[in-house]
Length: 426
Ligand SMILES: Cc1cc2nc3c(=O)[nH]c(=O)nc-3n(C[C@H](O)[C@H](O)[C@H](O)COP(=O)(O)OP(=O)(O)OC[C@H]3O[C@@H](n4cnc5c(N)ncnc54)[C@H](O)[C@@H]3O)c2cc1C
Image 1: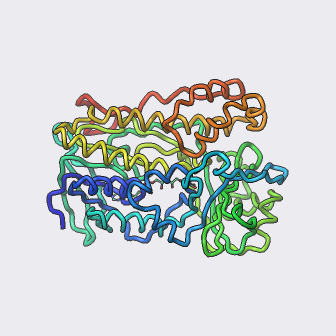
Image 2: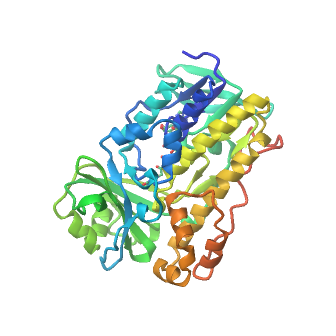
Image 3: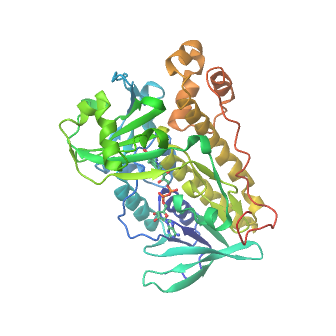
């Protein structure tokens, strides 16, 4: 058991276990705490091609290849009238093993990531909730909370990584939540056994089926003949009928009103409870401060229409692991030493965020766009598959003719001066 870690990671989701794994691979002593016992339920099942590179770095690709997870080769769209597009196969865009990715059951995927990080030398402790970041002289010096027996503890380290997901430990403690209001949506979902799938490789596709008012369904084929099916829309749309406020009834109504979903779920049986989440897009005001770095959803949550959440969690976990290792090596764990980390991370998120805004803009029609700008088709695809380190200036300049492309969010850089970290409003 590690008693004096170099780094504490809060949260053993994809961001936390990846950061812990990378740090352990650098030879760092790292303890990762998760308030839950695993396996635990989590939403976020569809991976995108560029997750491959982080998964390869931490040694997960062969394990995923040997797993029973559904292989995902493509995505597909269904119009409101029920017309299904041809699947878009990733290998029609580039020739690389990354063109086949996976649809994962997160309870299993997260446990695999955890076991992989443990095998590399990280220590993962379950049932241990971090209640607070310990702040001394405007520097985070560790966390306090309750251990698996309910006993209070305080653990100290030179660096802490907040990877607590949408529980967002630092964001809540410091008042750093900056909502991305235009993207406010609700999601309601459950699971079905025996739903219709396309034959062959196309059967692993994520399908996005449009509903009125720019809402959409996801249709994600998991293993064991389970289908994850969720609807995402504005609150006003989903809760429009005063007489139908029960989420299971709203969900059933939306399926009944959609020809494609009705047909595809006709032979299926619902096999889980109906779940809901809301108001979910935000960014933290800061990605770091002295002694602290944020990774994954604890820093930024973006609408899931392009299935980018696990990708950003893995990628930011990897980047945070490297950045923290470098900071420790240089002996400079100030917030300022994470400036490059924050810039690269925010630039990547901004590319995907612009794409999400364009998706919700009624004037955008991808077919028209590609016909007018065929030379930008590759850029559009790169953005969708997660090649977000690229310069997408020309793509979004052209998109601006069709849609309102948002200005970049003016926050997310590290907190570099010692102000207001002991209370809300920093
Ligand atoms: C409706 C919906 C659909 C989505 N669909 C997709 C999709 O198809 N594809 C995709 O890639 N992404 C999707 N996402 C996003 C995806 O779920 C997240 O982006 C991803 O799980 C983020 O990983 P993470 O490691 O940052 O956080 P999480 O996976 O949330 O992990 C955080 C961990 O921290 C632990 N924790 C929290 N607080 C504490 C604490 N105080 N102390 C100790 N431990 C703590 C939690 O128990 C948890 O295990 C979806 C999200 C939603 C809401």
